[in-house]
Length: 255
Image: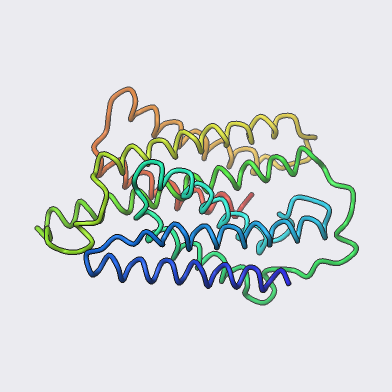
């Protein structure tokens, strides 16, 4: 059942992304993108709830569950930020990423079968740390998507593709950069909570685990600090956000 929930969620996300891109290509912004995303989000939630009930723990026990949780986090922040700040086209760029994550989770061997042995005593602090970390990465992933959208908009302007359907439907550069900054701040706040929980956890984690998390946190804090104190161009900011998110994915894999 859990795999069917995740597969159906991926299907809805694929439909939403594909139909949304077709609408943009014809110069029309589809209002259904948010609806498709909401449907995929609810199925993701059902998947995570089902796995959590079976395991009696936060569903972050294997790579498949982590990918599912990360995809859910990504859509959560899109549904909170996209419609509210008039950047619903963000979903057209976000949904394909969600599809890739969920298809990767469905690869045989990635999502483990839940057995009775999975229901064991859990460490609340460890689970809180894992959940906060994945939520933070969801916000940072969406910030990176906003960065990609800004870079696409910047390229369209430089190449004078001013009549394309994509250019006419992309949000203004200022709104993209504001959304990008808000998402980074939200992600950093959540990540800070994860760092605090790490300090409170029993000291059985490796120094690599601690240092990798600190490096990611410091990187995002530096990006936000530079933007607030000195200012930075939209192109450089977007490149930095995308690049640091890709670097942090390696750190995430280590953790």
